[in-house]
Length: 486
Image 1 (cartoon, helix red, strand yellow):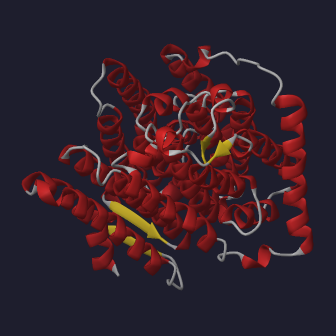
Image 2: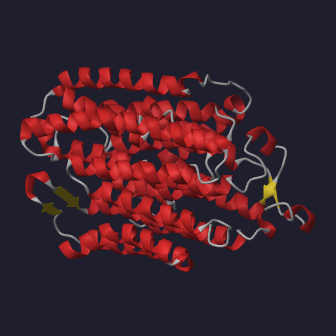
Image 3: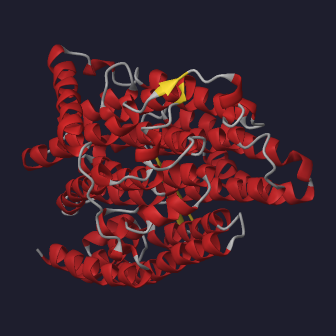
């Protein structure tokens, strides 16, 4: 298993460079990397006990692989495969597929790391690859948005690196478990960096603009897989250190409520999905021990929704309400929205039930409010008008696009995955478990129809400005330091 793990970690990087030597193999090699990760994730689910690999002793790399890692790796594999298939017949160059594969590999490496210095390296490589994909269209606007993401990320990781050094000073290794002996400022610095990388709470305010300006496939990668690289280490620390668990759970509830509050009032499709990504990451952290299943469900749903958002006739909900979308596209949109809302027969139902069963008593009210907000948010998609378009109307949509085959194949993989993953937690199907989510969805739809769908509130965007993002880091650091002391 050790050899297999090393091959899995290094293959995406080697294949990414090989693509430049053999450009005709770009799509095939990129897809092979994703399939290989899916196969490796399947191996992780068969492990009877966690696999720990230590390379080069205390100064080297420490990898931790278990079923929790398997869920995140599988999410990365399926999202990457769907994006590559979606872009298969597009005009994107070899550079795009090489960077996608390198990004995929860096996410895998970050998910496997169990020491702070190796995680730092993986996250920094991830940031560079993500920046290159964000800036791929080469317009002035997206280059600025990419640089903004890169600068915010790098500043956060500088604080993180100082925290990692403090852990080594206290524990003589960079292992996650070293946080127990490290001073409070080490925890505050490290967690601040991970909160920014994962898009958690107010530290996730870089997400809306980044998603709204990026191409849909890149948004799908960022939301479906990339942010998970900062979330799993936080969940891992909560599981390894019981002292850290309450802090992670507090941020989980706060993130779930913060993101869904913005999502309910947002009128732009991609910005709404970005804010809801922030919210859903909170569900993963609210119950770290079962966060893997929720991460898989969220990755499948959000990737599908971002790809669908890219083929809608408009990004403005008001315009979409007056411009019917093609019925097959609406069906895919509705299935994904039903899943994230917690509707039975889809994996979102089982993921929400499992998460709610593993909450602490003080978390229940907040997370139920977040679930209600989710139903309100996605009612905006579910109740969009739709019809079967004629030939003349379809000519201006995906119908005659070269992306048509790739789009529907990707949808088959992602949306089909929601039905298959529903079998993971089939114990969720009891009368009580079914009635509660359905009641939550029904109440959310009623609130949408009679209140939230009729009001137009534009929330301020000042905190998303570049200088305020840096300021938020300072506030987050102070908050984390206070929580660590407490």
